[in-house]
Image (cartoon, rainbow, N blue to C red; front, top):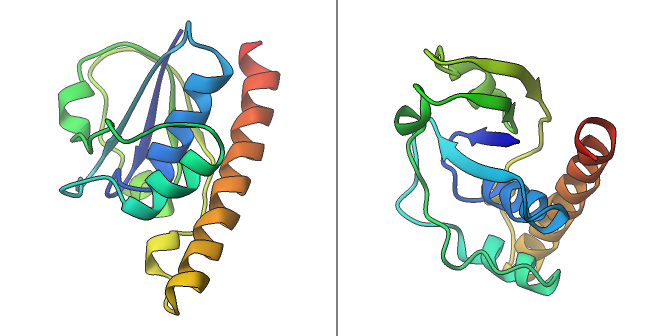
Length: 138
């Protein structure tokens, strides 16, 4: 089973989804990428995932272009922009799915408020991807 998770920057939402999916089943090959990848994974995403017992410190934002010729069972977009900008895959994609989430990095406020927003989105991602896993994978 091969799953690619797409976002715009590949620094928050797709990285959290990647971490959760890998924690649900170590046998699944999970990759995440961005249409316009950031320079690094968000430190807030790393922190809130660590609170859930998942280490994404070694993840790196990748450009979706490096995965276009690969074969995927699922390509999952997690933001509306990536959904609109999703490139045409030249290889076989069994199923393309959209599970959209707000971008926690766009939230304005104090550090405490920003972390609260990251935790909220993390929990939404965990629930949505767990439901996806139960319905389509396990």
